[in-house]
Image (cartoon, rainbow, N blue to C red; front, side, top):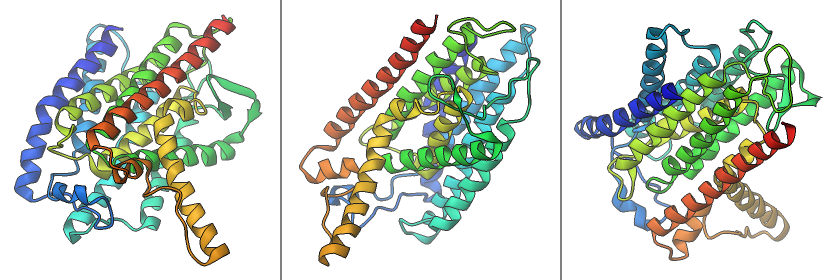
Length: 363
């Protein structure tokens, strides 16, 4: 437990103290956010706000994890494990894809960065590499970081995917979640605050798994997860990094996380779900992100359907994603953010409740 707290505290302090340095550097370099002309007009005042602040979140998370493991080594423990390193690889890898997207926007002074094909290619390379590696590195009892079974609160033994099936499903989960967080990052502090709640849930879930491993003889309520403590360390560091960044990203934001941060955070959520064997539970834990994504799918699908049927496309929402619908409905930005945080907190708490209920029933 102490190492988890150390990872969280180091990451929090690094994020709070170093983000202003990132703000100052990006201001000197002119790395200001471009704003959609077809978006809410109230957002135009945000043009020029430094972006790519996700580098502070990523750096703080990595440092928090590294310091925690350094202390573990000093106390005679082992070094970093495969699961923790793979989670950070996924976070950094998708952060690089997002960074390139942000950089192109800045260089070309437009709100469109990487083309869709290039972005999906980057996600494909990073996601498939992660899923393949996650099936390697068996420990002494043969457990690998990921499992070829679909999982909910633990592996569903009746649903085996096979290695190829797992790679495909894993890639879909990673791509969907990284894009979902990216879509949600449209208001000051919304994605950072909601993400911190999901990572907090994963911290508690992984710690519970760490305290109840199956060992050589599985007993009721135990978990067959390779490195739950490492997963908890990464989740705690990411949670605190988001909280620290939120100090500067809250409305009115002094810096945006950009695609650098949103894609990294979404990818890490997916990675933690895969590594903790809670893939389907992620839909509940990240309920806000799922709802925002669904609003975009509904809007696009209904518009295309009605255009084909009637010749005139119709919309379900005033604007998608969902938070812009409420903005155009007259809600204040801060009101939307706080209420969406409440929804995110309820979803994360409900997901943890489902996990703990299964643990109690299985014990």
